[in-house]
Image 1 (tube, one colour):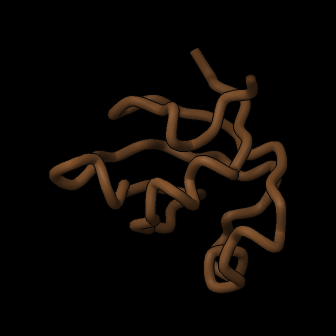
Image 2 (cartoon, helix red, strand yellow):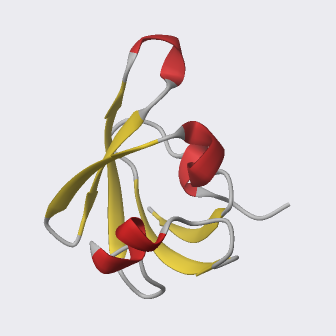
Length: 76
């Protein structure tokens, strides 16, 4: 099973590798949620949904359901 944004813990980083475009809202793509971009997990709301991310300097809140379909490569 590949890592997804949903697997990141607070402060962890990764690079977006792939996702199913039909499952990711167009607005996220327009805001930089694209393969090759860096993502940092900032924090999560109570009950772990939504999660707050920094993607190439843009701060976003996304649903955990969406985060589970965005594949990443973790950074140490």
